Image (cartoon, rainbow, N blue to C red; front, side, top):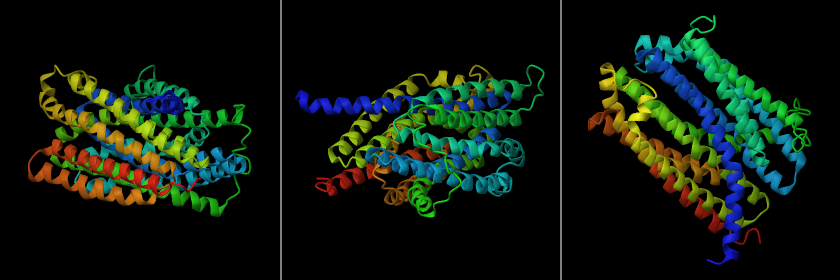
Length: 457
């Protein structure tokens, strides 16, 4: 390969990593909030681990779906940035705030009544009572969490993602200290257990959101965009455009995370010990998944910017460079997880305690499946990010239905309950869905590129 052909690839790699590294760091740090919550839940008791993990992931599902909907700002901002349309950037952000408020208020009501649904889904009453304690505090952190996700999409589209990393790291450190102080009752504070963990996380979300807003006001390169001026003006046409792009993203996420949520409730039916083991595998999988997830945000921004510049070669290069980097990274993570399974589990529970022997027996094979499946999960998420950069959001919804519901849920249920693989079978089914999704998304991206040849000439 000549230097002429290599140079654009290297340039794309540098541009991608400049965006991806802070976004990945921010996602990992943000996920550490749930990780720290889970670790501390484990030290409060395995019943609290089961209930708190169920509640925490339930909240995360709602948050991720809403964050996906407001993520519609990212490809629109990236395209406008590439095309040099300053007013468009301001108006998209302002309507993103309206969308954030509306989604948050309606979803808070749903979260407040999740205890009724949990009981109907066959969860143990004691588990539901403990989970509700967490959720009824945590719901007050939904608006700042969704608002932060929306503004993160704005700064990513403007190629100014570095501050996100520092803000999230600061919020995570605050949450860790808050968990310890409020959860266990240190330094004169009452021992609030699950409610304390939820309160610390809620305060952390508010802090991160407000700091990001201040940053957007103060940063010299960002304050030229009057993002919050005339925020009160409702532009229905632009709001509808955001909804048309964002809702399919949210629906796609709902299939993916909804499948994991259904898995979690099915784990509860299999037994509290299986549910506790699942929480360890799930939380570990969530943390490592933040790496390709952050990279997918960078992929959306890079593809979206090339789309705004109407450069087909740039779009292709951005998509394939990001996918290659993600596959390489996820393979390294998978090897590390397989090598250090015992050490990873030891972060959550005392593996030398005889009382945890059954838990250890259940979680080791689950963690092995998570390690291998992570490679395919990373590829499907990055390919999906490339499609979002092209503002292609509706067809991927259909692919998500086929992959995660038609293949993932059905195969997981059959493997787990009919073949008798239990929790491991449910995890295998989920990753079969990821394999199908990765195949479909990569095919779709290549197909769109071939159809656009000559369009930008």
